[in-house]
Length: 165
Image 1 (cartoon, rainbow, N blue to C red):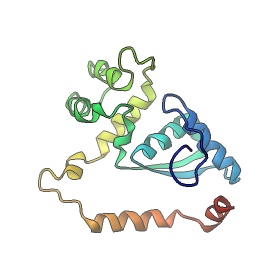
Image 2 (image 1 turned 90 degrees about the horizontal axis):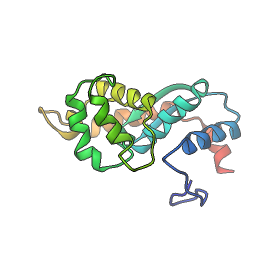
Image 3 (image 1 turned 30 degrees about the vertical axis):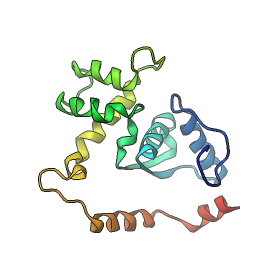
Image 4 (image 1 turned 45 degrees about the vertical axis):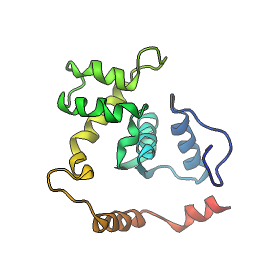
């Protein structure tokens, strides 16, 4: 919603579960009890929030290039590298930095421990150095083709036709 194309005009907030509620309502409109969610960039954040908001509706969760998880992009350049070096346990002193990344002072946002834990899980299993091309890693079109083939397996004609109506 609120994006170019044929989406509805209202813009949803990234500061609450608006997108998660919207996605659950889309599942309801399609008469789907649950679904495999795949999110790219910010879509990864939306899919993850949906899994936290309505876990019974999410069969599996796949995130591609989940850099959209940060609410404020400045932390992608400054905060994430520091977070990566603090370890993967939000209970340790790194929580202070996570709080700053997810709920900067005077932002009015609350720190969501579940989202922070999920981010740590993503970072634990997501090869950021390969994406950046470090350590001789060279992601290429072959990797993209494999990802597209995997995504195509989950696309069913019935829901797509329903959405077109």
